[in-house]
Image 1: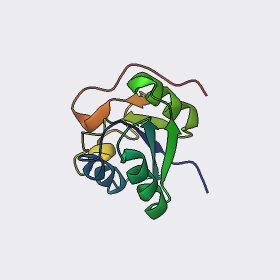
Image 2 (image 1 turned 45 degrees about the horizontal axis):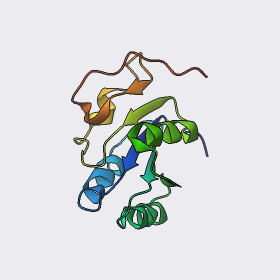
Image 3 (image 1 turned 30 degrees about the horizontal axis):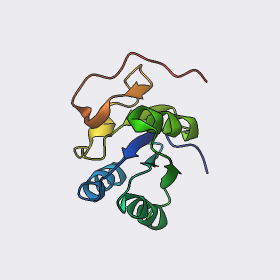
Image 4 (image 1 turned 90 degrees about the vertical axis):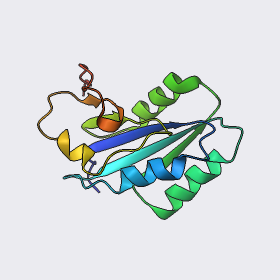
Length: 129
């Protein structure tokens, strides 16, 4: 299987109430070249980790990383280390992407790390490959 064009990284901590909406908004995106979603369970004390596992079981584009509580930056870094796509999107677990949001970014944007939810401009950072 080829690498997806976009990987969406979602740090997850105490997200039982919002995670389904968040992940559904990601997997419903239509992206040329495909997409992947990495859910990073950051040691959440509730059942968010089990919900992440349920998403991974039902959609092959979703993968889960379980780790001790390293904070949102640590969760994003873990997701970056596991990502293998040309573009990266960070999305908070209490946010959702609007339909078609990821189509707005590729392939026109020169930036490789994109901000969450399409509400702010892309970050001026390029991943080294």
